Image (cartoon, rainbow, N blue to C red; front, side, top):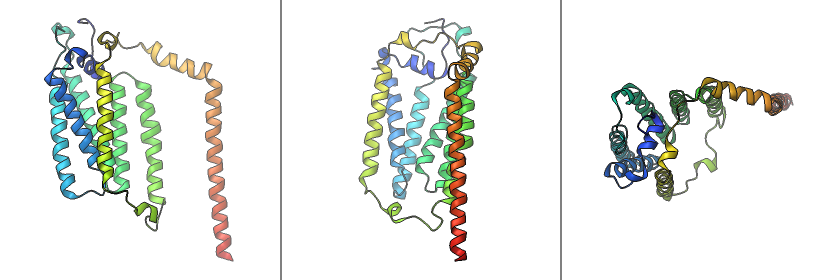
Length: 265
């Protein structure tokens, strides 16, 4: 325990052990997380201005409590030598990236304009990819930026710019009432509580890491398995995507020709 180096998510999970479940710091941490999640859900669009302002204040307070509680405490009895202590700069980078990811995710679901929501979503994905890179998962980090931030967000922007040019449809203007924020907050709190309590029940020994995987076992092994044993699956997936692209182009061209024919008539 004392000789293993833990950082980032692994360090936080190792800190939140079963022994610390009754610690005031642990409960303050999870209360802060609950407040941030609940108020973020309360900040859904089409809410009153005073509710959004109060939500911003509570979210900042919860996030401040979360930042104060999480990174500065070591597990009880876990004494490490100065050479084994995690570098402070790495912990600061992890905290900054986590704050950027959480705030941009909250801004995504609370933005009133779809265009701004898509941009905040892209920033959230960049933060997630940066956290993957910080933890040594290079493939997941690059794939997140290439697939989601580079393709999915662009598709969202095209849909936002091209869909409903004449305004919202009738079903888009209908409201589900004022109980939606309350139900969303309740569901978010229950989900956060279940996940947090599940983390607390994990065996502390199972949380310890055995060190980062080597490059050969991490990326080269993944590539060999993907393009070796799963080569047929990769080729079939690529073929399906190509067929979908060709069909989309054909449908677009056919629709354009039908519109031109109707105009000529």
